[in-house]
Length: 448
Image 1: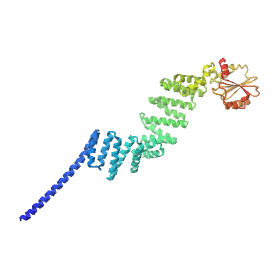
Image 2: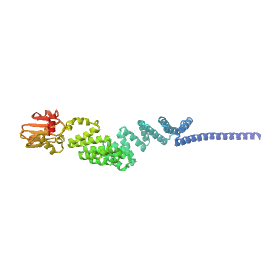
Image 3: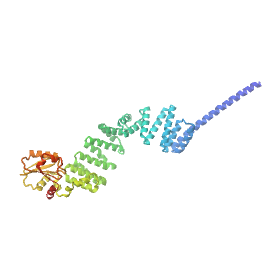
Image 4: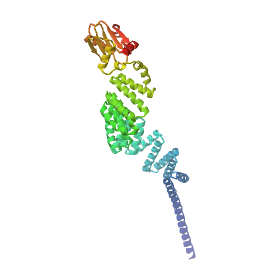
């Protein structure tokens, strides 16, 4: 009987000891689990409050015990990123990614890959960033963030074809992504697809608020497209609203004036420049006066052009080629009556020439693009009215005029303030003429 009781007591003690052992193991496991949970919670709490050092210290302590825990590595990376230690942040994000893959946590790993890519991008390591964005797209081709960032990097690298492919995919998925459409419009422009680029910029201009810088940039680039297509009216219409944007005013004003000059609308160019001269800075005034001079010169009003080049020179004698222009046209500036000789009016010019040459009787007149020919009883006087040396093309035209309108002359005199080019001296009629140029012509003009 006593032996049976002893055996029973022994079995009871065994089971009690075993139970206690299991409880102890469970308690140890729970303590470790709760410790881990507490460490993770404490780190996350510190990260949220911006106490990155505290989060980092906790993470580095715990990772020694759990070297394969990807969430702890991820939180350590976040702490380093918060402290702007990007190299260590990237290291731990990459470690977290490797650990997540090892534990088959592919969805979580995809988030880590994007974090690594964004951090490389933020740190201007665009090649590494691009590699991770591509990795993200291999796992999820519809990752809109990865599509945009990869395309943006490729655009900066001038890999327009691949960037275009990504952005066209993105804008099909997200037609309201205006930033993507903006870069895509710029890509169309870069690869010469101007019609597509113009269409995209028009949509952006309509869709974006006035306060968005992309709207103004879209207008500037659309205007550039119109200019290249020689749609000058559309170019001016697109640019004109930007005159009301203070930081763009002078830049846009100069572009509009230049567009008018290219289009041959010299009066509009001069009027717009003159109207806004008072609002312009000193630097802009220099350029405006120079452009007015160019407009007058191209319109044929040489004397007015020189007046505005003089104003440019007074404001900034180092601006572009104004110093050379002043030296070249010094004879015109210093000589009286040049305003009549270079008058835009045919009547004023012709009356002055008759007076200057003392022509009592003019039997006939012939005209070319750059000269007027006066026939008298014993000679033909061809007066070249441009402030350049006469070119072979001028002599070709003079020869045609002589043959068609004033044949039978005995002498030909050509008057050109700046003489003729060397090439012109080889022209067939050069040997037959008397050239009056330089000081000799200046004396005639000065006396009037």
